[in-house]
Amino acid sequence: MEKDSKIYVAGHRGMVGSAIVRELKKQGYNNIITRTHAELDLIRQANVEKFFAEEKPEYVFLAAAKVGGIGANSEAPADFMYQNMMIAMNVIHEAWKNNCRKLEFLGSSCIYPRLAPQPMKEDCLLTSALEQTNEAYALAKISGLKYCAYLNQQYGTDFISVMPTNLYGLNDNYHPTRSHVLPALIRRFHEAKVNSLPSVTCWGDGSAMREFLYVDDLANLCVFLMNNYSGNETVNAGTGKDLSIKALAELIAEIVGYKGEILWDTSKPNGTPRKLLDVSKAAALGWKYKTELRDGIKLAYADFVKAPPMS
Image (cartoon, rainbow, N blue to C red; front, side, top):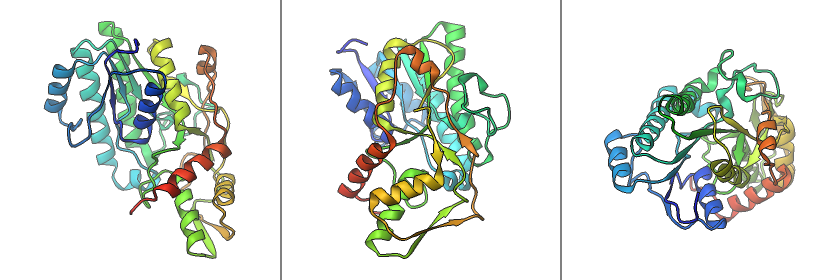
């Protein structure tokens, strides 16, 4: 990308999209196009067609998505599948039709099989069954990355995909029922501290293992890949290190300053037993994460306290 290349960041108000915009500006890119959902509904094909025909972006970061944790995915699988499938197909298709020079599709590590060998390599995709609690979301993301690969194969496009592990950081979603585990725990422990609650109850038994990447590190990788990688196979984005949800809860409680008891509701699902990415591919390309988990959670908590959610 040139510094004045026309770059469209889809989903710029979300945690990932806003981090990509920050990273692009930090690196001196000065021709960034954005649209709010009210200005451009990516689920509506005609709207996306019109936007691409008028704007003709040279590069696209596709970070727009409907996202949520285990609860949200379980309650509304049809919504998660339809909305994410439509966003992916509409944007990728119009980028191809309008001769976009390069597109980068953002997926999720939940695309990999529930019981994939750990750490999960990029080539384990579609080798066995998905995790049921987020299967709909995963199928939509798999379709997006496969459509990129098929366009490359059939039409010679340069469309790539990156699959991040669990993300957290500035501008995260702290909704009480629709957030992911790390921001959900930040909110829960903070509110318990403020209200002097004697205990906090977490889902599952705490044994599930998870990996977490600070979102600004992901954004740095996204720009790096746009400039340094081409290929049909996706690239994993993570730290290569994980910890149990129990250890995560204890770490967040410590950072927040909550002194009460942590209880576990074993009637609730754990989700996938372990989701650790093999990040050797990104490392071989010359990239490594910078933010350690404790430091990143401190930054995220400071951001949460500065602008706590209204609902």
